[in-house]
Length: 133
Image (cartoon, rainbow, N blue to C red; front, side, top):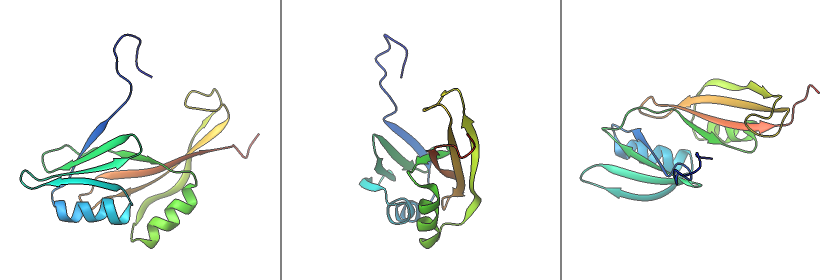
């Protein structure tokens, strides 16, 4: 939540580098299953929707790490592997949120990392109840 008085409610759009728009559209739409919104050639832009956040792909954008929220990280990784995604890091615990800083106290945050066709780092992430209580 943004500071009071700024009027900022959240993040609407994130830009990501895509040097080959055809390849990037295929990956984000067909491999990741994103909702494709529009493509504009020229200048070479493609837009996707992920829940409340829009993703803009363009050649001049910087590389950004995108973290995709999933309910079941193992099932999501298995589905993505079936679509040709190769993981650099398999699902692993990255944080146990004992204080509840990022959600329910005691939950664990799990992540698995992979790359898109342009080499941008991506991750799937999920939170779940801790097994070590």
